[in-house]
Image 1 (cartoon, helix red, strand yellow):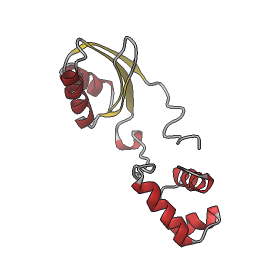
Image 2 (cartoon, helix red, strand yellow):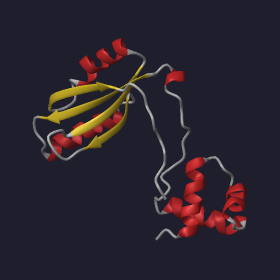
Image 3 (cartoon, one colour):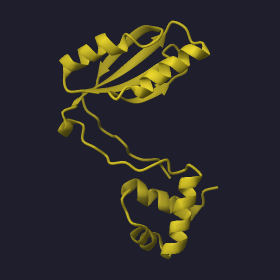
Length: 151
């Protein structure tokens, strides 16, 4: 179970994942050893899944974003597993959600520009297993990304 001290640790790390254990301990009012122990415990329990840099897609030439809604022809276990494996392996699909309802998946895709996205759509999205329908929406402005969980 996650207690108040763990939540404080998690709040701080969501703001700055590179914070040293010493700085983290100081911010939450613990000494380094118990702070470090709690941190390792949160990692081993899977509460903290990893650490990564928050990159600016536009600065890396990937300023075009689209949300793609996918409906599948069939939704048996093997088809879903195949579809999900191919989505997970594709580096241009940066987020994927399986949904309840008429739409089976929502994908977030990045590309350099509209022409590159069109090629990606034509050559890769349409080749995903059992795709019946694809509907794209272009992202005009990302107002809130990687905001962290409300803990």
